Image (cartoon, rainbow, N blue to C red; front, side, top):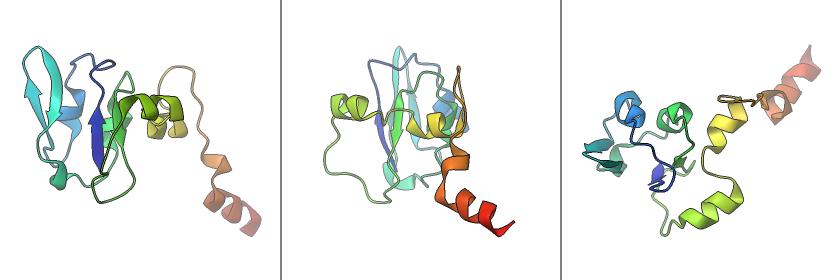
Length: 109
């Protein structure tokens, strides 16, 4: 579920607003988008995937988290972690081959 739009990282491009299939975000003039309908989030990670500056955090949990601390998310490397894991953006490369499912499939060949 979408949990955070980082005010310090967001460049107000509103790509997350455009790519969200369930219209979770609202555009805000001269400010980062807001999470207006969090309960509508399907945890598809599209917003995090398309964010060019890793300003979003989508938690894999379906229920909203009790507390979100942006600084802790930064230190843990969670902001944009989905995008990083699939290798989108900059000099990143995918880590898919390290996934346990990929390892099982490799052994089945």
